[in-house]
Length: 232
Ligand code: DX5
Ligand code: ZN
Image 1 (cartoon, protein in one colour):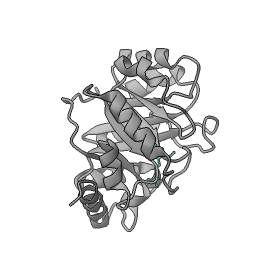
Image 2: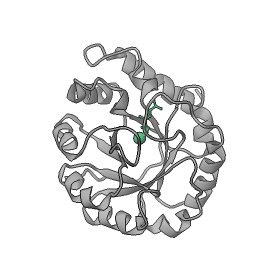
Image 3: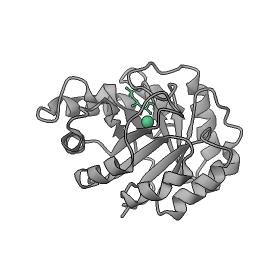
């Protein structure tokens, strides 16, 4: 069953396992959690909505026993609706669907909540925020794509800083997380938090320099990112 927690805007670091060892996902998830990760971010790609293929509900179900906390599942797939039940049964906590994934995003968000998951809304770099006010009652998280989705290791697009500020103002005091995904590093973390982010997804910045058997580097990377984000 999904784990539900009270809302808090305390900074959360969410390693993306897209940058982990694909032959060792269970141990990689246990390692980043033990080293201080708040959530584990799982990038589901279909080779159609985005030009890359990763994994599906069976993978999420297999990982569930290896992740104590939040499984934050980012669906880069279209259509979304036929897959919602299967991901919910896999025990994921949040399903984030793209606003660009189909003509009926409101129905998709309702289906995600009806399946017992919290609902996230992801927005590509080239997409305007105009529809977001109409969806605020139906979401628990907004994921601002700061790179074009599909691949890890890209550079954050600077024009997204203004979009983050716009969305933070739209959220106001609603219990909606503002998550940043793509190109997050120690160098930009403080600016992202200042713009309004409370969840930082990071793949390369966290998994660099270590492995599941030697995970001290993951801990150092997570602490460094958190310290930078908090301006310490
Ligand atoms: C991109 C994914 C991201 C990606 C981030 O489509 O949604 O979660 O793994 O990777 P980095 O942090 O390397 O940009
Ligand atoms: Zn992602």
